[in-house]
Length: 81
Image (tube, rainbow, N blue to C red; front, top):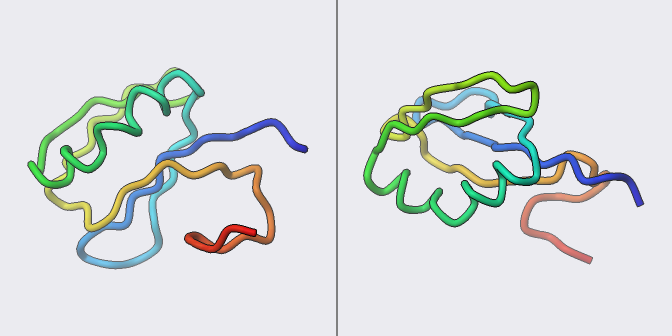
């Protein structure tokens, strides 16, 4: 099995391709439990990416946000074998 590659996936309310931000395991763990509240509140949150960059995200423009493992192959979101 490949090493996990957690990423924050954002689907913007305006449509288009999702935005993906590679995260460390620690950052994805901190963020995962708060995503629902951040989207509901339309909050602005600073996220540290895997390459140690800081990204400010305005969740008021996000329709869906989740943490996904980019190391998984041949899987469709929501369908687990």
